[in-house]
Every structure is written in structure tokens, then in C-alpha cells.
Amino acid sequence: MTASTYLVTVSGPDRVGVGRELFAALTSLSDRGVEISDVAQITIRGALVLCAEVVSSGPARSEIEAALAGRNIRGEGITATVEEVTPSEMGEGHRLLVTFLAPRITAGQLEDLFAAIARTGSTCERIVHLASYPVDCYELVVRGADHAALREGLTIVAKADGLDLAVQRAGLHRRSKHLVVMDADSTLLQDEVIDLLADECGCAGDVSAITELAMAGEIDFAESLRRRVALLEGLPATVLDDVRARLRLTPGARTLLRTLRRLGYVPAVVSGGFVEVLEPLMAELGVDYLEANHLEIVDGRLTGGLVGEIVDRAGKAGALRRFAEEVGVPLEQTVAVGDGANDIDMLSVAGLGIAFNAKPVVQDHADTALSVPYLDAVLYFLGISREEIEAE
Image (tube, rainbow, N blue to C red; front, side):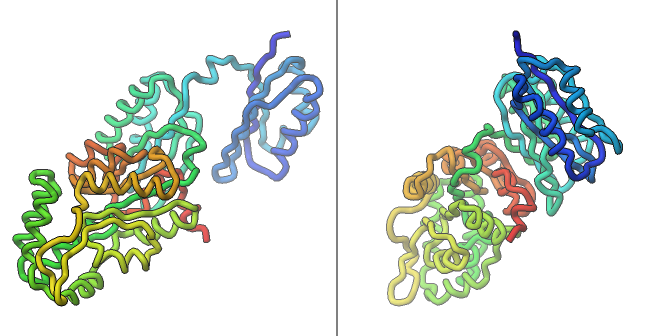
């Protein structure tokens, strides 16, 4: 006898014992060839939708309905339906995770996204509301055969509707150990360290102008760094402590780092800034992996030079690879977050590259971009909900 597939749907006001009654009814048919192949449930404000997909080599639809009735599932506003389905109705292709966020997500934005999904012949299997503050964030599980067309269509809608969007493959790797590598200046920190040092020596204008050219990719980062550091010649080394005390973390930075460590992820910082300023701060924040430049200090003063190789665009990507090897994770399980042109190689190498409030040239090389000012929004692209973030 050819097996048939049925979708059993229980819906209505949620109450204690509904799930037990459904599965008891299906258990009563198990010795006659009824097997569960999939289960899903959602409850919103006390309204329940519980679905079980079953494959039956024996009982027909009427017998499954009779088993449900015998368990008294129906009643008190609850309905239970049984519908025969075919493989084509259950969708084809592989699953993708679609995560999108904004200060507030409207019905119109959702309409546009679901229209883009439909245009590629894809279907949404699940919707999870990851956060409602400080941003609104949803994650969809989408099944479709043409992933390239789906990504392109969703990206066009996201840009037009002002949504930050990431499209990733679904799988168990999502919650395995990850390495999360962040830039420091203007990413983990609100400040540019070298600009604060320039304030101390009265050359802020000159340094800031060179910084802007470098971050926009208009001049070579290594050369720009040498020129900026040369302007700091003669500063007393004690200024480094003063600058560190002035540093401001980006909103959500402590939450991001605390959550990553608690959930078993490994945070790291790769910076074009300076070890002498960053290392004590990273120790305070619990970041064990740091790569940055070394200032030359002689007789308690900055010489205007650097020691060792410069951590430039290529150096950042190399540090990410090295950290991944030391931590023991493949590159596809690495995440890079940055804002400047010298982060482009790092963002491209990582399994997921996130441009954080970055210029267009950087966004073009990243997998996704965040335009909200909260660094812990990175967690949503890892599938971590606000509830998990706030759990002790």
C-alpha cells in the first residue's frame, strides 16, 4: 500500500494538555503504520497553532480524525483538522535563514519581503520574533530552490525599505562555536584612538584629515598610519593612560561581549590602533585575542614611529585566519565586524562579514550591514534572541 502524508493542525486558545492529547491520539495509531515526520508549534498571546506531519501506510484520513475526536482535543474553541498533502505542497529546495531588523518593522515592510520571497517561488516555513527592543528583529526560515534570486530580491527590498538584512544557510553549524572578530575604532569603540592622541599633541585637524582619507580607501592605510603617528612625536607615554580613560564603548558593546562569552563564542579584536592603549581595556572586557599596532616608546616618550609589522587591511585578514586556527574553528564559523576600508579583507574572509555603520565601499564587500547604533544587534544575525541576551 502506498503511504499517504497528512498534516494535522490543532488551533485555538492554548490550554494545558493539548499537546499531550494530540500525541496520545497519534500514538494510538502507531502500531498501524502512522509515524510522525515533523512537528511545529507557535503560540501568540494565548492563541495556539500546533501542526504534526504524519506518514500513514495504513489508516486513512477518517481514522486519524476519529482518533483525534476520541482524545477530546476539539472543544473550548479548539479545532483539529486533518489534510492530505503531497510533496509539492510541502515545498522544495533547501532552507535559508533570513534575518532583518530596523528600529520598527511595519506591515508594509513585511509585505514587501514576503512578495520578494513569493516571486522566487520560495515559501516561508517559520517566523521568529527575535527582539522588539532596542530594535525590531525577525528571523525567517525560507525554503526555495533558487537561492541567488532569493538573496537578490530580498536585498533590493531591504535597501528600499531601510532594513538591515542577512541571508544565511540554515544548519546545525549556526549554534556551534564561533569566533567573532571586531574592529576597535568606530566599531567596538565610539572613538578613533589616534584622534584622541592627536588632541593631546595639538595636531587633531591634520590627523583627522588623514584618517578620513584612509578609512574611505583613498590612500594606503599603512602609509597613512605612519604619517599620522609621526605627528605624535614627543608625546609622553603617560598620555596613553589618559586616552584610554576617555574611550567610550559603542552602545551594546558590553552586552555583546558578555553574551558571546556566556554562550561559548570567542570574541576577538583586530585593530589598526595600538596595543598600548587597547590591551588593558581588552583585559577588562574579557577579550583574550587582540591584534594591533605597537607604538615605539623611548625614554618615556613616543618617537613618532612604530615597532613591527603594521596591522593593515591584509594584516587584519591574516589575524582572523590565525585566531580561527588557534581557537579551532573553520573560517565559515567566523564573524567579522568592521566599519572602514581596512576591514574589507577581514569581512570578505569571514564566514559572515558585517559592516557596522560603514561607508558604501565597505558595505559592498560585506555579507550584511548594520545601520543601527547598537553593537549587540550583531547577536541577532547569530540567531540569538533578546530573551537569551537578557538571561542570566
